[in-house]
Image 1 (tube, rainbow, N blue to C red):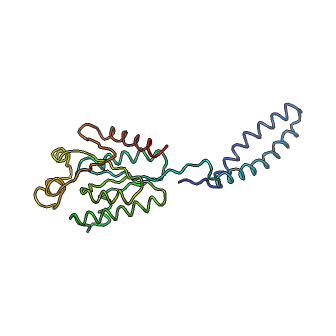
Image 2 (image 1 turned 90 degrees about the horizontal axis):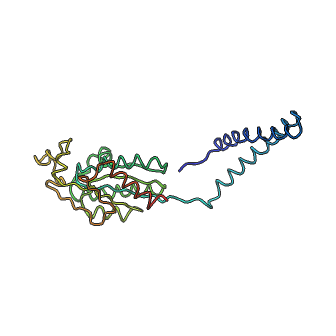
Length: 241
């Protein structure tokens, strides 16, 4: 959230008073034809009203009436590796940032770079999702919304996230394994097929598609830009009114 500083309030008051005082001086001069009286009236009015304006701004800043709090939300992007989650999530994050709401971007790669020994077994992944849920809860307690992208292949780990965080929006980025292989600029599927990567969703590991996703994005039908528009509009309609 943004807080109006005293300095900003004062500058706003000064710029407004320059306009208002000039107007007052012109009116006094027109009616009385005395430049000295016009200047004196303008200066006196400026000093008094700048102070009053500042007090008025500070008073209204402390009054909560008429203010609406935007409840934090979590956009949870899930899908097979290389389905397009990160690309779409990045575009959605960029568009939501323009709305000037408190927002953070969380991606699986960034987190694993910080905690490289997480592991890829079902138990390891579920434990990891609980950590991510705790992180999102902490951010939400500070009124910060999140855009998160994780493969999160198991139903129980996604259920954990839904139970832990507020206003969870599951975005299922849908693409079949063959399509993901064609997009595999990282060579991840090749390494999984050769046995270098173990328990890889779509190869030797399962991916349990969401049954109750708020949004399903078929990347074979929609471009990343088109998908981002749909998701941002959904958020605006349901969470930012």
